[in-house]
Structures are given as C-alpha cells and as structure tokens.
Length: 312
Ligand code: HEM
Image (cartoon, rainbow, N blue to C red; front, top):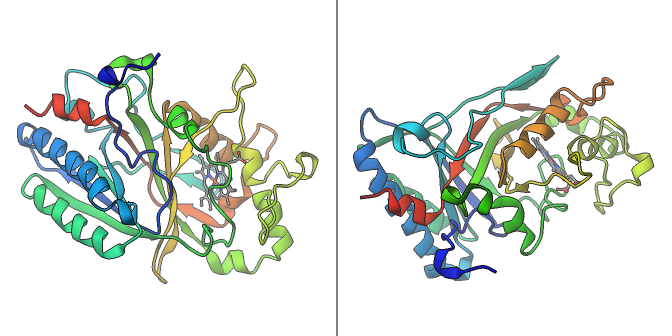
C-alpha cells in the first residue's frame, strides 16, 4: 500500500515521455560554495517542477542531477547506496571513457524558445556558484529515430513501469524516488555508417530500418546491438533501464546523447560491458565501430523532497 503522505516527489523529467527538443547543461561547482549551492539546487529543481505545470501545453519537463564525484562534498551526511563514478572501460578500438561533471541539468520541451529562456534563467540562478562547462541541444529526428536512421526507444518501459524501472523504492529509503543517471555523448561516424548497405546496418541493430521490426531471435547476430544489451539477471528476469536519449549536434559533430535512468546502477554497467567487452566469445557490439563515446558521466537525481530537506 502506497502512502502519498510519505512518498517523496520525483523530479518529473526522470520518467517523462519524449519531447521535440532538449538542452543539456553540464556544470562544475566553484570552490567551497556548498552552503549556498544546496538551497540554490533545491530552488532550481522546484522551478523546473513548477514550469512543468505552467508549460504543460508544450510538455515541459526536466531534472537536475548531482555528479558521483561531487556528491560527498555537497551532501556529506548521506550517499545513495550504489552511486559510483562512471564505469570507464575499453577493449580494442571500443572506448567508453569517463568524463565527470558536478551537476547535470536536463530540460526538455516541445517548444525550443521556452527551453532557451529557461536555460538562461537557470544559469542566472546558479551565477557565482558554478561554471557551465558543456552544453548541447537535442532534437527529435524524423519519427523518433537516431541519426543512424533507426527508431530509438521502442523497447523502453511504458506507462507505470517507467517509474518501476527508473525510481528507487524502499530498497534505499533515504533516497526513495531518486534515480541513477548515466550519460554518454556519442559522436557518430555517419559517412562510414551511410556507406554500409542497409541489410548490414539492420544486422548491426537487430531490427529492420524502415519498419522497425525486431529480428527473430534465431536471426539476431550475437554482435547486434539489441542482442548485446538485452540481458537477464540470475533469476532470468529482464534487466531494464529507462532511456531518455536524443540526437544532438550540428554538421561538424553529431550523434546520440545517451541517457540511462535506473533504480540501480548495475543494469547500465552490465549492458555497457556487454557492448564493449562482449559475451566472452569475442562478440562485441558492432554499433561501436560507427560511433565513439566522447564522455561518460555518472549522476544521481534525488527527489525534490531530498533536495529541499538539505536546503536549510
Ligand atoms: C535499443 C540505438 C547506445 C541500451 C536500441 C535500439 C536502437 C538503439 C536503434 C532499438 C530500438 C529500441 O528498442 O530502442 C542506440 C545508439 C546508441 C545506443 C545509436 C549509441 C550510439 C546504447 C547504450 C546502451 C543501450 C550505451 C546501454 C548501455 C539499449 C537497450 C535497448 C536498446 C537496453 C533495448 C533492447 C531491447 O530490449 O530490445 N538502441 N543505442 N544503447 N539500447 Fe541502444
């Protein structure tokens, strides 16, 4: 039985449905600002929460997340049980480097002008406390496709199972309604990808391109992306994450801003391992021959109530 009185409020962007536009702001904190930053963070998260109602017509949503390496400076008294630095890994030419940031603000909306205004406002609220070190803008491409031309997000959890997959429950009561966030900025080599015949592209994804039909299990190459990331735990239960990725970039550099939201940090790490290192029989994810992870960052998006409780 769920008691709404004691249910901490989640940040609404963690589980929100997809949008047309996004802005990603990566910040590092200035020295010794934590006393001022704690209330400021609570204000920014509350501001994003209120705009979700104000701009409901254009489906505004967002969340703020705190970097794994910064967490103990900001909130020294309590740490989410599974919060750890990004699991950097490498095998052959397949590189998943770590590049951590102190704070991540993720805002999305179906109106780009609103996002632009809100991003400016948030940076103003943070003034003097943090430095903006990276910014990207994401967009919906065609009918929810990645820039490779394949529909992305089809097998994401739907409806209430988005919350079940992405939000911490009673297993870590102090951090209930929070979420582990992993971000990788992938830069695609599209000229290389576009030289591949369509059937080869489909074999790499494990789905057809135009109609987005999943391959029959027996036809899925062990090196296909969906074969490598479709994992089961020791009880035979599907290991799931909620992906909030979007295409980003400009002609010079473009790809997928990959974002995983999950109630544990293990599912993402196991999937990435399976992509980079493969299955132990030399079968790694061939998608990685066509895209390069430029960053890898680990964050935690606490509940609004957690941030508020630490603001004073
Ligand atoms: C599925 C693209 C990176 C996890 C998919 C699908 C596409 C795709 C097209 C099939 C449609 C769907 O179900 O969404 C990409 C691209 C990536 C990327 C272009 C980077 C360049 C990753 C990473 C992970 C991941 C880094 C996790 C570590 C998944 C999962 C699924 C999926 C769990 C659903 C598999 C299933 O149950 O069928 N991805 N992906 N992806 N991807 Fe990725």
